[in-house]
Amino acid sequence: MPRTLRTLADEALAALVRGGFALVRALGPDRASDIGAAAARLLGPLTPAHRIARDNIDAAFPEKSAADRAAILRESWENLGRTACEYVHMGTLFDYDHENPRAGRIEISEADIARFVALREDGKPAIFFAAHLANWELPAVAARAYDLPSAALYRTPNNQAIARDIVRMRKDVMGELIPAGLSAPLRMMEALDAGLHLGMLVDQRFGRGPKIRFLGRTATANPLLARLARRFDCPVHGARAIRLPGNRFRLELTDAIELKRGANGQVDVDAATQQVNDIIEAWIREHPGQWLWQHRRWRM
Image (cartoon, rainbow, N blue to C red; front, side, top):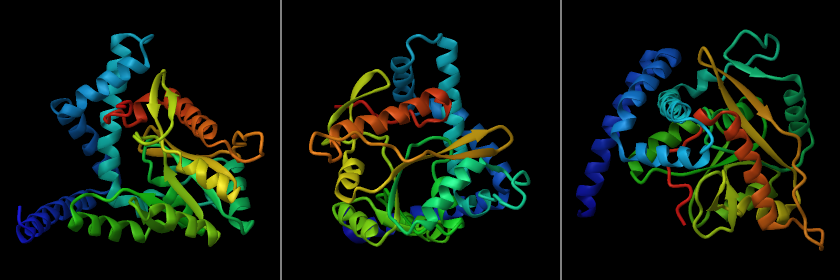
C-alpha cells in the first residue's frame, strides 16, 4: 500500500479506536471492566488466539482436570477484556489513599508501602520487573502517583496514529516512556544513569534470548534485565497487581531479589534470567486465570 494511503488508513482506524475509547470512558471504570469481561468471554473463543491459549494452559497444567483448565482459559479472556477496557480509566482506577487505605479499589500492605518509600527516598536507581498479570499497567501508575522517579519500557502499536493516542493517555499517569526498539537499551541505561526506577515486562518470548524452563517447558527469555542489573549493580524488585472481586486490586512489591552471581562476583545473566522467570512462574501458578496465555510464549 502506498505511504499516503497507508497513513490515511491508519488515521481512519485511529479515529475508530478513539471513538471506542470515548465510549468506554463514558461507561466509567466498573461498568467498562464488566462489559469488557463479557465481550472477551464471548468473542475470544472465536479467534485463533483461543487455540493458542488453550494449548498453552493444557501444557502448563496437565495435572488439572479439563474443567479446571477451561475455567482458567475463560478467566484469562475475562481478565484481558477487563484490562483493555480499564485502559482509559487508569488515572481514576488507581485511587489508593494512604490516609484512608480501605476507601478505594486498591489494596497495598504496610510492608509494601515501606519498601516503596525506601526506594523513593534512597536516591538510587532500581529495576522493577512485572508480567502480564491482572491489570499490568497499575504498578507503573502507582509509581507516578506517589512521586517515584521512574521510566517504563513499552511496546508501540504498528499503527502510528494509535500509538500517538496511547502515549498521550499514558504520559499523564506514568513516568518517562521508553518505546521498545533498537534505541531502547541505550535509553534504559540513560534512565538508570539518571537515577530513575526502570520498569519492564519480562514474561514474553524473546527469540534471541537464553533458553530457560518456564511452566514446565523450554522457552527463550529476554536477558536485558539481568544485563542491566549486571552493568549498574542496582537493586531488582518484582512488582505485580492481583485482581480481586468487585473490580478491586492488590499491589505487591517484593524485597530486592538477590540475583545469582558468577565466580567473578558479577550477575550471571543466564542464571538471573531463569531466576526472575521462576518468580513470574510462581505468580502465574498462584493466579493462572489472570495471565495473558494468548501468545506463542514457547515458540522457538
